[in-house]
Image (cartoon, rainbow over all chains, first blue to last red; front, top):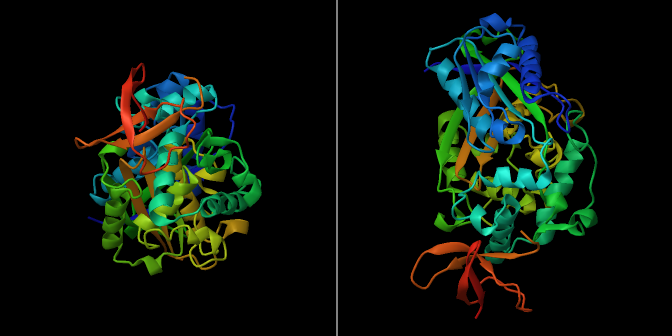
Length: 386
Length: 51
């Protein structure tokens, strides 16, 4: 297997967008190709993360449609669906295609258009990422599942409501610095704690945003990457793991086994330790999800993940900033796009191009993309070459 | 589905766990470790109530 690098990255602003699902995907692809200085005809394979195009806007078979709109040739176009980890799975398939030597240039994108559906309908569509027969059927939504998870984490590990809320405060502070973020505004601790309850103990500001948006990256072999971009970013690890979808089947609902397994595999592939990571994009679909992921990935001992935001370790300027993009919480969460958008953020950071939210000297970044309540997880580790 | 409503992950004496509704006609605030008993079936599956 040969090394793989990112030579182009593109994104659309996240939020309520007027463009169609396909147009959003095509814009991100064109931006990534332009960043790579590559003509669309050079792309040999296209992988697209999209969770629910049909359910949200009545459109299936999205991969060839986006590819056509972006000007790609008659190349293999594949849509990957792994709930909120769809983008991470698409990236991993692209990495494998280039690493194996099957193709030299792969385009990876993620896209979702969610805001044209009513909120109740959106909650129902998203609930189908869980086990419908045993969870959605009893009235469970994803906020409800993560509410249960949060309660248990607080009960078993002593995590406080304030610690959970600090994740929202931190990620909104980061998102305020991201011109592509859906919600570019600060929130205060009292605002988070006093917000309207959604699924207790989680309130409005503990939940990620329903957004439209797309992101894309271009991959090529590392050995030729510098010929295409002055600051290629190397993919040091690409790992994926799974677990049972239903909470009732999990051994412990305060940890996600798929995250632990994918994280261990990623660090093994990269030959790096946790201390080597300069920043991370973590799947904060709910504030508690960030805390659990930081523990499952080994950055904090179990029960201590809440310290990250409270004590400033995961803030910009801290030891390992987390979600400099604003995360799903502030940047937004167009489900199929999220995993690729995390890679877009790390690419900017590792090229030193993240502007006001730049992490000085960023050399290694980790992306954690979770599907459902932990049934699917993709972890990627990227390294700077400049 | 009328809101609010209570959901709980219930551990069964017979083994296994299920996600189920808790009857909300009880004024007590349920918490982790409380005992519940099967109350009946509804349109949304099994319903438990505080023991």
